Length: 89
Image (tube, rainbow, N blue to C red; front, top):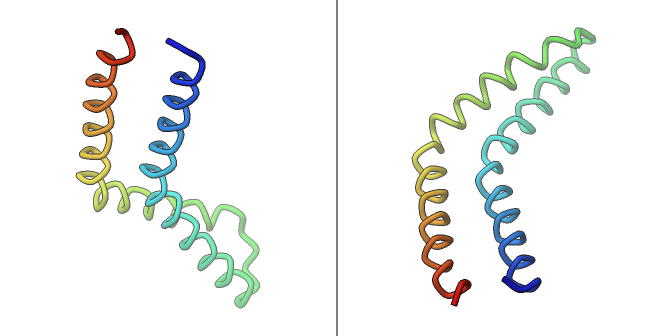
């Protein structure tokens, strides 16, 4: 395996990780900002108030986007295994 192929595989893997984790991170970010705005307007400065809504939002995102995430990972893995034949030869 040449250095270029290893870099390309690493780049594709990192892109897949970013693509698959984006729904959970995005929803967690939106909920975190909304709770922070709520805390700022009501002047409630409880640090633990942010964690429960963000965890719930992350689990909801996993439930909603789970099938899509699974299909993306399976497709990427299938393409990766199929490309091993061309890399080895």
